Length: 210
Figure 1 (spheres, rainbow, N blue to C red):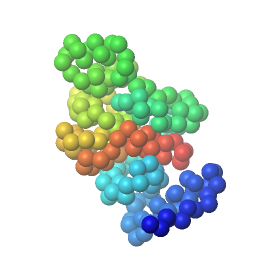
Figure 2: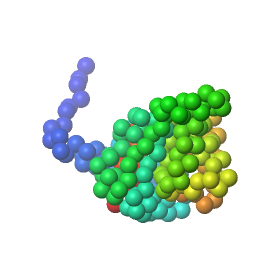
Figure 3: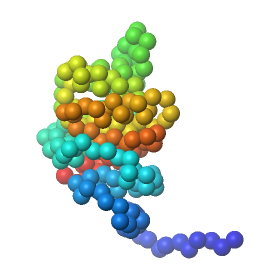
């Protein structure tokens, strides 16, 4: 069996080389220029070119999110894994931070009391803070459903909802709910694919282009 030839690439060049390969393999696929960096970083994180077709952006989503981040907006995630993947140093330059409430005792208590998921209780906790937030959801469809309800009730006005939970139960339906919100900026990965790594990659793609 013949081994594939390894490329000699310096560590600092690996990411640059990866993006060159992605650009080449995308070929003639048309991606709106303002969304291109987000799509490419999602592909870079997953090696999955489906994101070129499945990522859906509301009008001016990237522009509005970058303005919010520049203005000091913070990011709320639904997993500590997602939180770990976001470049906190880049975010801190503008005065924002990454928050995840999933392991908080009061969140666990509320979830127990109401018979809800911790993800729902986390979104309620974030809503009560009344701050400028970008919500990066990569795991829990129930978090997306709760965000949809909170927007409909006029309790939150997200600067952006990143809706990329992965899985099989209520995942697709929860994403489609976000796509129906008329005045909320969103970036959603249609279908079953996504994950905390994709949510973090999208956040970083926004941060790196400010």
